Image (tube, rainbow, N blue to C red; front, top):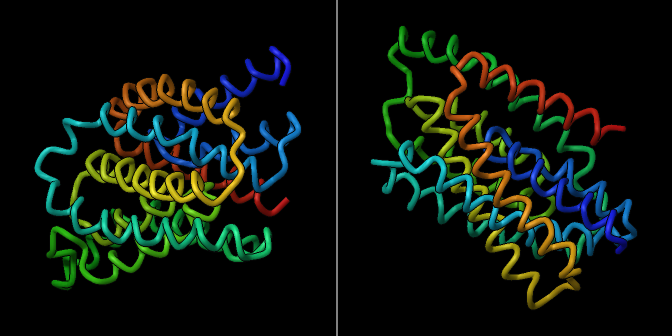
Length: 251
């Protein structure tokens, strides 16, 4: 890797750390850059997953105020995220590289609809006495977090959008607090996948360390930006990022 390529990977890591903390889909920045500097797809995916773990921790730390009082929720959903992430990491090494390509854009589209319609759906369900009445989202959210974890351990692009869509519909909570939860869950998925890859896959340590350094900085930037966004602006940003993710995955 040349010095300029190293700078590009570091910058991609910073951008991914920023956007992952605010919304998600940072992999859509780093993964193409790693391919462009010559890494094979599987090695790029594995190195990227490992590199983004410190950025997830940085973003979660930046949202620590919004995480207060969420310990029971995080313990419950975190277990599902860990199991899903581990299964996804295993599938990455045994399934064809394009196994999730067809279904992921559909899932992102559904998640975006949930993000956009969530306030209206919540009011409608509340008026009928069917709104969210549990702090943990019930079995539906547990299953959804597990499924998103499987996808996140496998590839990870837009897993944040999927998590925000699920939790926005199934949890009766502020969007910023939900975003803070998303950062922790995504970090757990990336973390358990990274630990598995340490023992089972080939890692480009230069790329992983450059992304890690950039993503830590990006995580703090993302926390500062994201926490200042009003709900309408945050929803709008989620939709824009999700549409870009769909377009990249489809094309």
